Image (cartoon, rainbow, N blue to C red):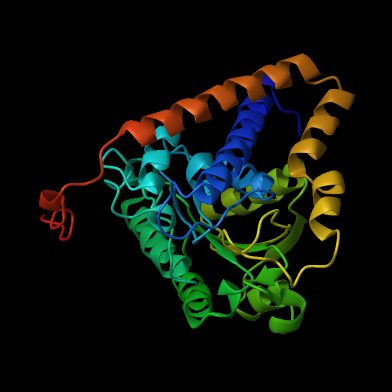
Length: 321
C-alpha cells in the first residue's frame, strides 16, 4: 500500500514523540522528580502508532499500566500527560491519576489501567455502544502477554464474539510478564486462543511499523464493516525494565544492547523510508529536534504547575448525569 509523505511524517513524529517522552520520563524519575510508579513503552512505538493511525475520534482504546505510548498515538496532549505524571493540577486527570491512569475521553482514550487485563471488558462496552448507536466506531484493547492469561480477557473474547462486537484485541507480547517469560507462562498460542472463540487472529512483527499498520488495517476494517472481533499478536520488546527501578536481572547479558542496535522500530522505519527515497534524513532530523523542544517545554510547564489542592480531593469522584 502506498503511503503519502504527510502520513509517513506524521507517523514518524508520533513514534519519535513517544520515544522522547519515555526517555525523558526515565531521566526525570531517576532524578526523583516524579511520584509513584512508572512503566515505560519505549521500544514498542510501532505497535501503538501502526494501530492508532487507523483510528479517529469515533473510536475508543483501552490501555495498560504501560500506557503513555497508546495515549500519544491516540492524540492525547503531551503537555497535559507530563503534568499528570508529575501529579500537577493541569494534568489530563487533574494530577490525581498519575502515570498508570491517564485518560482523555474526548480523544477516545478510555484510560491507562493499573489492573492487568482491565481494558478488554471496557472496550466491549464501548464497542456495544458504537454498534447500538451505529456510529461506525471500533474499540481496541491493548494488553500484554500477562494480561492474555487473565479471566477478564478471555471472558471479553467470548462476549465480543457472542455479541459480534467491533473490537480488536491487541496482545503486545514484549517477552515478559513483569519478569516471567511468556514462552514459559502462556500455554498454547495467542492465535489458537482466538481461534477457540471463533475469532480470526494474526501474529505480526512489532518492530516493523508497516507490518503492524497493514495487519491493523485488515482487523479494523473488518470490525468497522460488521465483521466482528479479531486479535493481533504483536511481537516486540521493551527497552526499559518492567518498571522504573527494575534491575532486569532476568534478561540475558547484552539483550537490551542488541535490541537497541538491531531491533529498534524507529531505526527500522527510518532506514526503510530513506532507502526508498520516501523521506530524507534532514527532514527526519528536523522532526526529532522539534520533538525534543516540545518535550523540554512539557517538562518545564509540568515543573511550574501547581499540585491539586485539598479542595480538589473529593472532586471527580462520582459522575452526575
